[in-house]
Length: 170
Image (cartoon, rainbow, N blue to C red):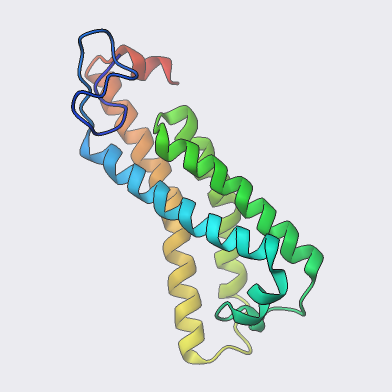
């Protein structure tokens, strides 16, 4: 097993060949941290929407700028966010490309259009709300795309260095 994947603990041999130790590249640490942040965000927002949809609509900043409350849509959004959180959590624990790219891709399928929706629907927002929404949504949309880019670059580098498990992951 190559040393470019796995948890960043020296001596962790859960995926290593007998007698080998795994090390983790700094880029994999960055990927894991980004995945963990997106996991927590999606889990909290998803659980809140799925369990207490009216509370989310009433209390989450700027949600009141959107169309009228619908318990059905709020719960659907919440459970979809929990499904994405599950994928992100798996990828954070096992940051191999065959987990990371689909998880970050699924997240980006939501986050990029979500950013553009808010960017083009600011009629009732104050300047502060518009800045908050645009900045926050742009940042999290970019995180998903950057995770994909870093994973692809990491794996290409590993293949060039001759790690056989990097080739098998594609």
